[in-house]
Length: 77
Image 1 (cartoon, rainbow, N blue to C red):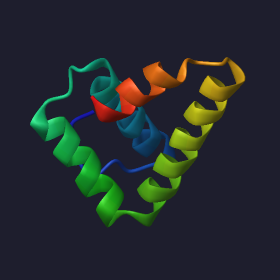
Image 2: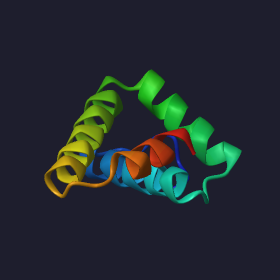
Image 3: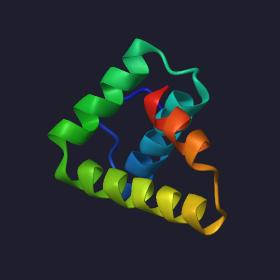
Image 4: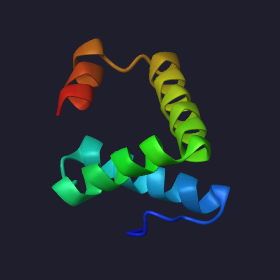
């Protein structure tokens, strides 16, 4: 999704998922990163969904014992 104005929670979550996935796999453009930052900064609903999405991702990684070095690489890339 390329629109900053996702209209439903499902649209917001899809945008967040797509942008975070691109960031973590190293294919995000500067525009992708800026769009996610703007979305989360401007929308309380997007912020709530972003935090929930990141929490769920962290819990899944923890439960499946993703190596700490891999998680740090993902966060700093």
